Image 1 (cartoon, helix red, strand yellow):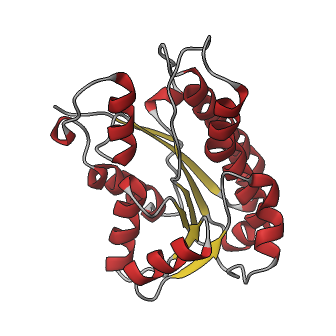
Image 2 (image 1 turned 60 degrees about the horizontal axis):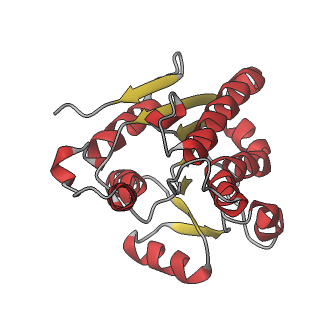
Length: 225
């Protein structure tokens, strides 16, 4: 099951797993987006739930057929909105915390019985901002620092149930999100200067394919140029 399969790292992961024949369940924010994703990945199924409104995810999931087996849950969706602390309004904080932190926690909670039964691997695609915060990145970095705490706590809690938890911390990756960041920073955007989403996808696939006698806890991926 993948969130954020529509673009960037999520799209690269979905395409990689689809090409090798994995059964994909793609979380989409609405029915229209769900149709787009299923058309893009023939044979995939969809689950509709808006990560921007985590309070309604339980209701949304209760109205749909949730998979009976989930071998891997990949939290890849995310949003970013930069600005200095002195200018960020509560709405901007809420939006990023909802999508980047609260929704992953709620999706995990709702699926936890299935994840336990499957002895699943849960991957949280974090960010370099989840390890250190820079000026103008406070809200996004706070959401990603929180995501690290969520992953670390979940790993300890669910180890007795056989669930593996991995956090991946990509540096700046060529994606629509990165184009937005550059626009907000007032900088020219050159995708070739940053990590290819395919490279991050390789690390995620490695984590879920790792034999059951081991797990990757934290994995940082940085631009090599």
